[in-house]
Image (tube, rainbow, N blue to C red; front, side, top):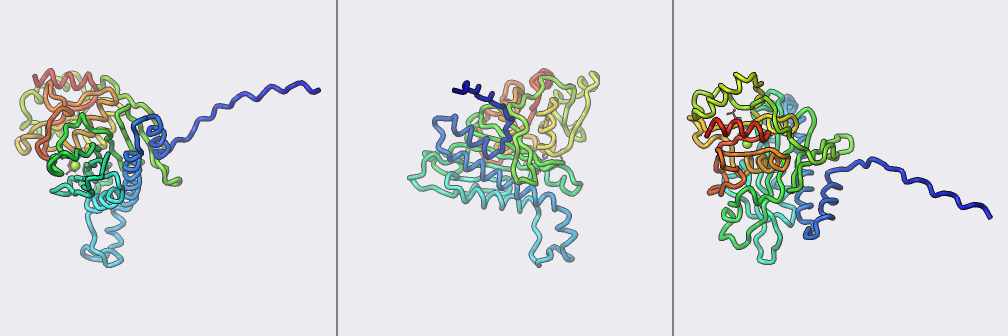
Length: 337
Ligand code: AHM
Ligand code: MG
């Protein structure tokens, strides 16, 4: 009788993980998950792939269009932020799990489903194309989103949406830059995916991103400096004495993405023109604050005031923003205090 052969050693293969399979894996480890959130995240993945393709063709549309605003098909040309908004509304609108959507582009929230049988539905808030003025100069732009549970006991759509950012169940952004990057948190750290245009899929490139605790760099529109509250001016004097670098794209998604990966602090302080700051709490500041905190950083509106704890009074309200590396946010807060 021949001697038994040893079984071959198991081979370890580094798997390729797409956003889709990552979402399904996350769903499988959450006992309470019903798959509804996964469907919504997959709608965001599809929408942002469509938007990425539109962004890539941005100036071509103008070149190919006839005089005026018509394109080659004789259709009226729309601004890309309007197109991005429509794509998100239409794709999310097709998902049964979405109760309400709210966008920077729409004054009022859109109620998609409100039947009493609807349980475990969600509200999705987004800025469809943040920093869109950068499109003219081929700069990075992005989509920012925030997902909240729909509160069916709320008296109306506004009331269901007006929850502090700490209640977000997921948040993220897509940066349409030199590559298209999808950064996501579902409250268990931050994961990053890059669009492989050949495969048509977002591929996982980094799991559990951590922002460095310090980095001698600040990101703010210094043109407004003279109208910042004094504390910010004191901070900037101090940072410059320390030899800090200044980096400001003027597109929040691009600036926050750099800070997530390399560290530093991003600020949009109150100014004379915008006494509450320029950025919107619910679909710009809150999702970015959740991502940054999940990556080990901090996000405040003022010393001792976490962005995620602000009780919103209006879906389009604004807030001052200071976020990034924990040590750098502490430095800003020390000068503001
Ligand atoms: P938008 O939503 O109208 O695009 O404005 C938001 C953008 C952010 O991306 C960016 O951080 C900020 O406005 C830049 O503003 P400023 O030009 O005042 O520095
Ligand atoms: Mg915006």
